[in-house]
Image (cartoon, rainbow, N blue to C red; front, side, top):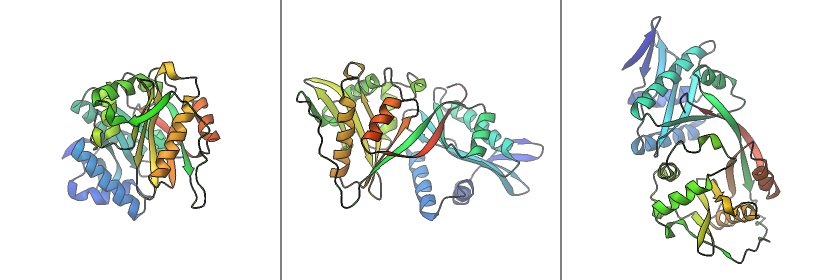
Length: 309
């Protein structure tokens, strides 16, 4: 289907049978394993949160630009990739603009965002030209275990605090707790309030049922839940720290260290060789805490939001 045209250029959707070729083109530096993962993840997300298909700009049968978004439950769309041949960056921006329009037609309240490697100048230029705006950057950090080392035992003792599986709470109550931990956060505060607590929870769950999220835990102070820890296992021994947070009243008491220590202990117990996370570069207290715990930065991404967010 043709979406639009300018000066004999065609902006068109990518047919299902052309997805493999399109992913190879739009991810030029990905190897075969990466491409298989990208395709599998895209198709999975299309089943659980369908979005408009990728678009491309062609001329005389040659692809000049293209891009696509993947969806998550809870009204979230994330840029998969955008690419344009040299000197054709305006066509990449055209693709982004068309996709954002389609996304908002699908769901006017959708949160549309992108996270781009800071060294990817071409993508930054195309996003900016498409009127995306950037509130911040995030650093990706990683803690790695060698086969000969184990994490140091925790020296943090809080006798009145305990952990329980998140599933001990109802999904509604956990969503409320999750929302409370976002109040006055230093991690991308511009996103606060843009989606409901239940939508935020849905985006973390992706295709999992809440009751089946075995690496999600709640921190209690007596009978009161005060924090949460969300971990997600991946292939090759990688565990991702999706989120960790405390309600405002529990902050400033050293409990952040307890959350990080618990994340390391749970990850190692399930066979992880590395634990990765992302943190807002403006959140200097959290970054300092992660670094003291042995995390090392390996990449910086710039976060973008679509116009209207």
